[in-house]
Image 1 (cartoon, rainbow, N blue to C red):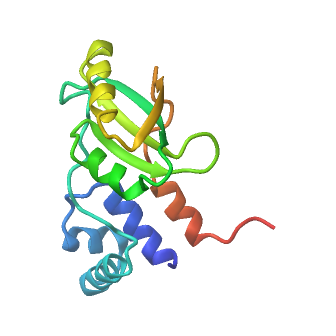
Image 2 (image 1 turned 45 degrees about the horizontal axis):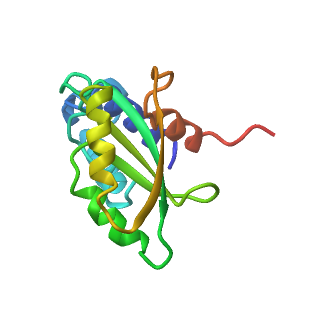
Length: 157
């Protein structure tokens, strides 16, 4: 990544519906250069999608929680992941080190509904135990743009 890539990413992160021609005008570079940079960033996996960002709260799921799952020995993480992927309220899951084997970020319509989601997660026989932490407020939402800017700049000495 170089400075031009960083500017292209930053602009499209702020305004994902912006056209390539308008981006080239704002950045002061040729339309073909903007398109080539976007194509390169997509092909290399830096840009992973163009879909809309959705708000679980606006969709009626204001409760966010994090489940730490302990997986039965020999059950396998892939089996548990397939089970979790079939539950719409599971937004993401990670295999982890430390206490527990997997983290899952889930959403629910209410605290009572969260119990339903947890019970659904625990129907997988490969999960021995779960502990839950409920998020009270989002202090920093998911973001990658600052990381992209840092990737362009050399680290401070």
